[in-house]
Image (cartoon, rainbow, N blue to C red):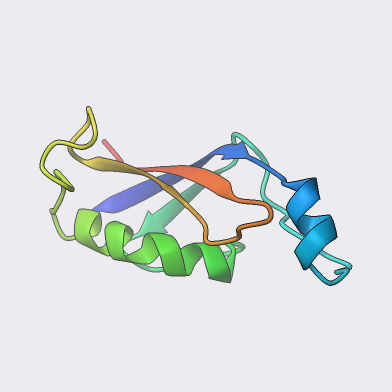
Length: 100
């Protein structure tokens, strides 16, 4: 199976939305910009955020099985995708690509 590389590219935090809508939480995202995860096929890498995995896993599965060229030429590299997790308060952007 094809290995897939996931790179944490950017983290954002919207303090205005957090203050207005979110209940206080003790622990938020542990991911760091530049952090890299390698997927063995479409399996979630150890230590990867469960919530982010829900957003990325369909693309990882497609790439791991030889797919790509999502949305007819969306990405310069057809064997990749720029995706983000579904946290509206502190979204994280990920670059997902086939390992060469």
